[in-house]
Image (tube, rainbow, N blue to C red):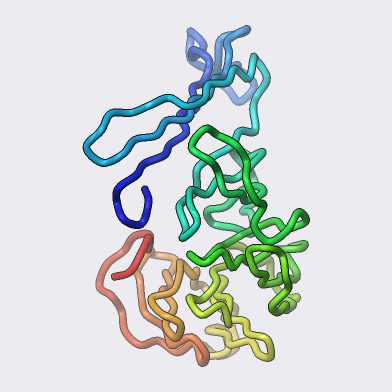
Length: 240
């Protein structure tokens, strides 16, 4: 949905018919042999009906489709060649593929962060985090100009990076990384490895963190000390 609530855009991916009988083991087929994967791009304006602006038949092969992932100040966002599943947690929690602006008819417009950017998070002005290899990242403008970059500590596998609203810090699991420093919740807890998972930013100085139990808490970003528990569990999806 557009930020003003006036426009909708959605991709509908349809699978082949399910296999009958259903699979009983991991080696059994899920879908009927010869069934097709199909995609529709649909748009709508407030108060109006839905219009199908693009249809595509992927055939019988397992696809890596374009997927709508959000909307920024410039328009709808989509990822290209999007994986539909993974065994290992990817660097991003919500962007899985090359990030582009998408026209209403499905045309791929500009690539955010430049052609070699694997985007893992994006701000409304187009600023993105580009992850290189799970060990380092760069923060770039929409056009690909490098704003700053940093390495992640080498003692862990870090996934789910979130860029602060002012683009000056990145939260991932139990750490916050800036140009010149790393704040770690583990260091606040007798040196043990953090059990926290970063889920986003409330503002440029406050991170939303989840414990293993799912309990949400507010943390001061640059010292990564707890401010307070929120008294609820869940997934942080926007401002509280």
